[in-house]
Length: 503
Image (tube, rainbow, N blue to C red):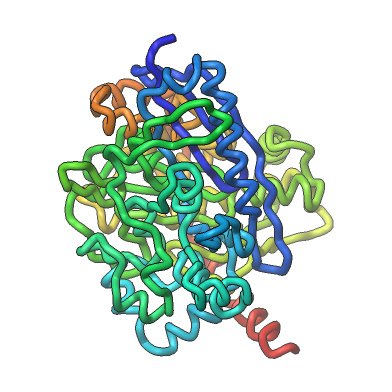
């Protein structure tokens, strides 16, 4: 079989390994679903050992189909970003569950730091506003609340990291995190491209617990496991949304993509200079290359998208499947006055209100499951508009098209509504697994076997969805949405205060 580029997409709900040829055409794929636990309201965690096993298993399955490890010329590893793991340096065992990016348990840590009037300085160093979303507060929480983590720190056996560091510790023998993932921790300085001593002090994290920071694309050694019967050359490590940006061939400043998965994450190429942001939209590293060049990105996340669809299916039984949700949404002529705020994991960019919860308003005896389905999909589309509109203020020109990928892009109603509310076309990726393709593409660059031209050719568009809504109707819909969002957020803020004081 011809030489293989292997892309690993270690995501929140599943891990996928996909083998590509050197034209970035898929050859073989494997996936494993992952368990997500919610032990308390607002808490989200996973089993770090299960994550590791899912990576080992999917790689084993794919390389077996492709002729063994010797067929693989480069591996690219994408990871789920802000999720953190604590482990024992000697045994290698996880000391606590992995705390997932959606988790809000570190909110008291964040509020304490905000009360010390440190947010502006932190944002200027990291490009990130204070929010439980990021890794630093989760690590501080683990040190404060987990006895095993504190004991490991006291004996200098503690190791902290995002999922990429956890995986490379076990599969490469050294804990590493690339520039793009490190930039999601709120401990990383966008200018120096290193762990920031001041931020480490603020969050109380010893630097010796953290992984080595490396470029996103270069010779990063090899991955090994007994089940693979050989070594795999690691040539790229990157955060998952940045991998999708590469998979869309967004190599020009201003190029814009959105990935519709567990959440919806909008990224734009911001060029080779670190952006100075106001905290509404994130500044982050897109990727870095062996020659020292760094590409930055603007980032905005909608934290609940696929999770909202799954909740309507599994929690409420409104629909039997994600596919049925589209039919339900189309079964009614409008939302029946129902409005849904998809904030099951707080309200992300550009508002950054972690205390806000999901809201469904406007229910009447005439409300049907179709109205609920339509309102939920509309809410996701509106939240993406919130992000794109805020991001557009910082781009060199007004966005002319939004490239989209992810599981929810199979929902035709959602795509049409998104185009209508944005007022610009959507370009739908031909490859469903754009994150894995981007990871493999960057690995191919790291191995010197492909260039950006090949990636651009592979980033084919299956279809375009053109806006059909008149501008006046679009403006009315957006105005209605923003009034609802402000009212819902205010209501939830008052509700949060009642929960906090026990009333």
